[in-house]
Image (cartoon, rainbow, N blue to C red; front, side, top):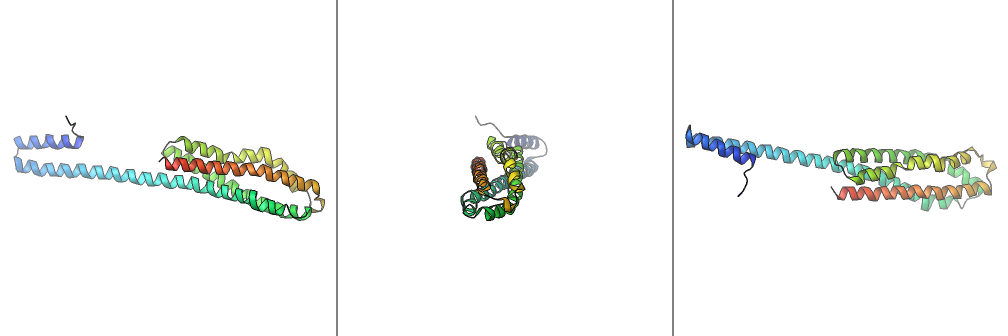
Length: 200
């Protein structure tokens, strides 16, 4: 036996009342009004769900986009920029690294925060563990940089170009190895966000 929906039950009840009260014609007219009202409410609910789904997708895409930009920049530094500047002499290497690092830090730190914030908003709207996992991965760049890389950064920044030597160059080689882990974190966050979006 089929179970009547709320709209069907309301229309059936109204139809029976009208048939025994004011007549079939009025009852049929009111049935149609009730039917249209039910359809309108249903369409409104479906439209609202579609709007919310689009908003969820946009927020998720923002988290993914910022993470992908972070990962792309980190990957470029790891596999292109840093190996290329290591071919310079000691002084030129340090001279080139200092402004490059300052600009890269400002950009990547901002991208990590924006991606993590968007992921938390996406989780609040459509809970999925991948949003939290991705946010943790991308935001992990902050404590990793502060505790694992910043002491070395400060040492290099304090060096004058005239003091650059083989030791400072070896420190910059070490910096490149440490930075590579930030690339891994960015790529991992990007993959996790792709998983979250594909599960929506």
